[in-house]
Amino acid sequence: MIENPYFWVALAFLIFVGIVIKMAGKSIVGGLDARAERIRNELEQAQKLREDAQAALAQIQRKQRDALKEAEAIIASAREEADRLRRQAATDLDSSLRRREAQALDKIAQAEAQALQQVRDMAVDIAVAATEKLLVQNLDQARNDVLVNQAIAELPAKLH
Image 1 (cartoon, rainbow, N blue to C red):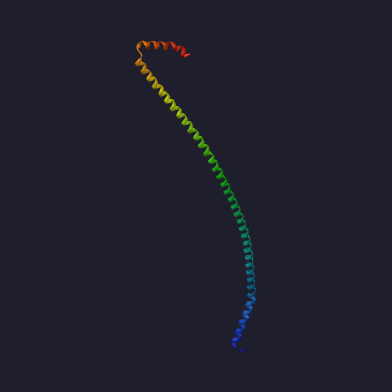
Image 2 (tube, rainbow, N blue to C red):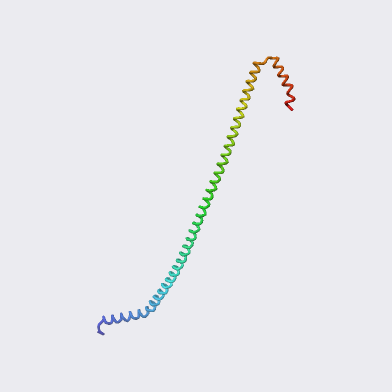
């Protein structure tokens, strides 16, 4: 066995592996420790980010609930305002219709009075024309002169 070259190669290989493990073992263990520390730090950062994200989510959810409540309040207020405006518009329309009806009745009354006055004026004109025609046909010149003189005499008494 001492004379076997495979034995010496295997022994040299084992010694070499032992030296490499001893020398590289510290750096491998140090690297593994450093990597474990780095992973631990990343996990802590991830946990902190997760907690921050949960806090932000909770805050956003609160804001969303508040915004929904505010939107509901705005909608309720808008509905109340719309109802108030609708009632006001109905009241204004009713009063406007009453005013227009009163104006229409006044115009009708004025038109009736004007028509009645026109009928009266026309009746007076017709009566005057008929009277004039009758007087012209039935009066002679002498009777006409007497009536004109009598009217002229009565004129000062009727003017005062």
